[in-house]
Amino acid sequence: MALRIENVGSKSVIVTGGANGIGAQSVRTFHQNGANVIIADLPSERIAAETLISSLSEPSRALYIPTDILNWNEMKSLYQQSIDRFGRVDIVVANAGAMESKEFYDFETDERGDLKEPIEAYRIVDINLKGTMTMHHMRSNPTDSDGFCGSVVLIASTSGYFGGTGVVSYVTSKHGVVGLLRASQRAANKLRVRVNVVAPFFTPTHITSEYSEKWRVRGLPANTVEDVAFAIVQTAVNPGMKGQSCLVAGKQTREIEDARAAMVPQWVGEDIARLMADAGEFFDDIGGYPLPKARL
Image 1 (cartoon, rainbow, N blue to C red):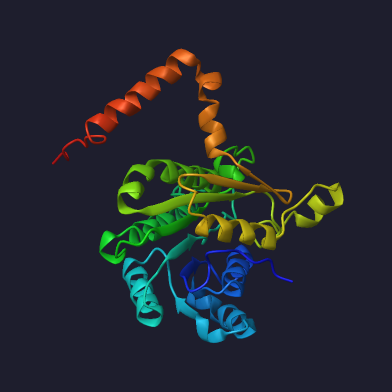
Image 2: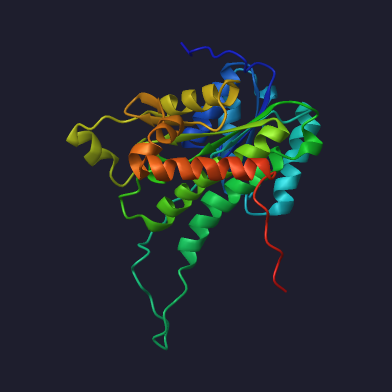
């Protein structure tokens, strides 16, 4: 029996990368709790998305919109179609992500012996970070908020905090997602949009398929997609969560942004921690960080 979560019913939710894995389970969990759901995923995932919708108890509360999150016009269309169908967009789950299929340090050269540009590495950063920034930007647009306190859930990873696996582009991009969380809070508070992170540890999905069985044989605990989706939905609708990060590891959850902040004096020392706090107050007093003029 599905667990019930309060404050979900009647909300409209976009889930990027929503046709498979954690995204698909998030769609199910939102829908089971009464939300309208919009699956934003690539055209190649149409069959998976439509199969998912047909499996829901009320398919009329679900919509698939083929979307490339790196295409600005398609993203604008995603929002407009979602509003046309359900009246508004209350929650965005920026779940779409990818991992590289070749090592960053596997250097390749062309026929002249010149180093090739690492195109795939850049593509992963674009998907995981640029695409996430685009989703966040659109949901935070004050012209669409109507005074409503919206919610954005950014999907990071434990790799966004620890990153010792050596998967360069994925780890780099997920650190960027955590940076986006921290950098967004001042503006998010003004715009009345809650921005939080869910950071899953090992969860059997396509990304982890190459070593999932070895992980199981080793006897290490693993999340399920249901565990992570439950954390995503709870984070999305909990009005008390602002600027927080929910780590999901081995079926356990921990809030880690507040814990990190509390440990700064131990990390850098009381004197530097005080200096950094004073600097924060300084920027608050002058209305934020003054941006430099663009160089022509």
